[in-house]
Amino acid sequence: MLESKGKLIIKDKARKSMHGRHPWVFSGAVNAVSEEIVKGDVVDIIDGRGGFFGKAFFNPESQIVARILTFDEIECSLDMIRARLERAIALRKSLPEYDQCTAWRLVYAEADHLPGLLVDYYSGYVHVQFHSAGWEPVKKDIVAMIAELTGCIAIFDGSDPEMRHKEGLYTVNETIYGDEPPDNISVVEFGRKFDVDIKKGQKSGLYLDQKFNHQNILRFATGRKVLDCFSYTGGFALAALDGGCDSLTAIESSDAAVAQLEINVALNRRGSEDVKVITGDAFEILREMADAGERFDMIILDPPAFCKSKTAIVKACRGYKDINRIAMQLLSPNGILVSCS
Ligand code: SAH
Image (cartoon, rainbow, N blue to C red):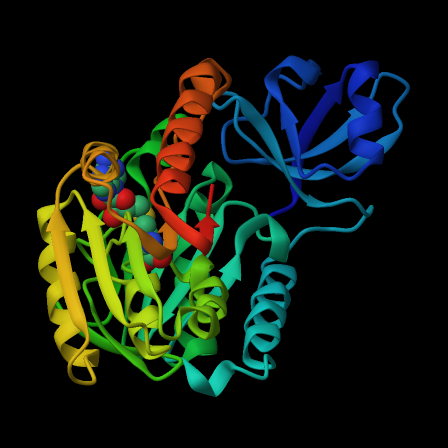
């Protein structure tokens, strides 16, 4: 089903990036494509002299015209995909921390040689995202494989509409295997309890890619007055509580996230810590705090991506500079700044 349908010839200048095993071919690197191929097909990537570089999902509607499936001259097949899914899942399960969490990102797209495919596991429920046109013709097979390999109760397709739009794909937001997952799924991250809404939450419900960073701040939070900015449902905030912080102030602009954050704080509170959750714009609130001369011993900044394309670079730099500068003003001597971007 995934056999190659044609050829994509890259410009000479793109050979270096292919030799470097970059997983994408951008539109500017395309010299020509065979006439018969359509969006979602698998194509051979070759250069003008016929040299073979790899096989890829083709999508002329995306700036990422091809997403590499293999750099080897092999036949692509569903068996190959299945083996990759199996390997990705086995890798995550082999992590020494696997048993300490019931929510995991099992498949990391390009990093697992499954371009544009994200699979997140939440206590028996799976949230999946298909961000490449190549998956459309085989989606049913992939869903069956994920169901089998994870033994999950249900699978929800919560693909990012913006990512799909960039690929020229329609928006999906539905249960694609089993009965609809509940609004709240209880998961545990290193002993910390979270209620997660995988259908309406941001990303897949939690920022699972930050899991180890959450855990890393725990040991630094002990006895500190912590300020967690851009809290979402408390990935860092709950770790600070877990680490025995002296007080916790969390700032988050989304009402839905704040409601969930408050539930999660209540689920994990040990006792008398002073916890304050503020709904609002972190930029404004930090400025007010700085003007009022407030100080914190640990400040965590985990803002949304300010820069998703080249055109946003200048504004994004200003945003990152502002937020970090104000946070530094708010830091007490020997304080710790945790800055994510
Ligand atoms: N730290 C969280 C993830 C943060 S994602 C975790 O690890 O779980 C970024 C968050 O910032 C989102 O929840 C978003 O709603 C919030 N946000 C976006 N702009 C904001 C602003 N100006 N002020 C405060 N929060 C903001």
